[in-house]
Length: 276
Image (tube, rainbow, N blue to C red; front, side, top):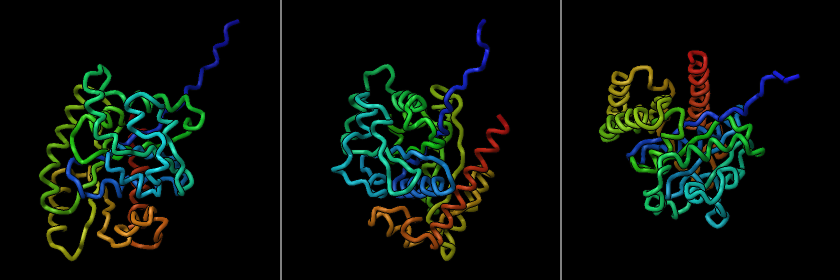
């Protein structure tokens, strides 16, 4: 007799690409601290460091000498993402580190037919890796450019999270980023959405910060998170100690903001699943 019992397929983690082609907007800081906050409330999170500078790796205390396998090796197809994954000091938070080798990976991938899908394929395979099958979130820290690496991230992602600094020049590149998301959705990844825009480095004493916040909320409406990340010296200090700010100083305003952001991200994710 044929067994008609439904087969339970492994669940793919939710994949969020943190992207902004402008540097210095708090993208890596948000990846580190949002990942830490999600892990603190019970999620199992992998941060994929796709920036050749490797700041997310350094900010999580992973020494360059200990990065035996990296995202460069993953994109080249030499190792799986699970093999590159390392534990961090935060329970439930893992890292696929970056190295400077990533600077040359686009030339190596350029002639490959699957050059835009290398990361997607690697993430899809995670569900069959015993060590990784219970991951709930993958956060991709993209380089500060709209490059083939960033296209790989957006092709792999379910949604894009955009950190946006509360300064005038940060607004200039936003429309180009949104256009790139539309192009990826049209040609490579039809499920891709903007999960939200998080305003960073907000200074209430600065009139420009308030004006930028008002302009972005008027332009993007409810796509902008309610949570705003303040300019906070403890957030700036934490990476030099190889720690997320939640480990460095849990009580500071920056830590509390990232905890609120994590809760807001999860609420949005639940609303998206309910609407699907």
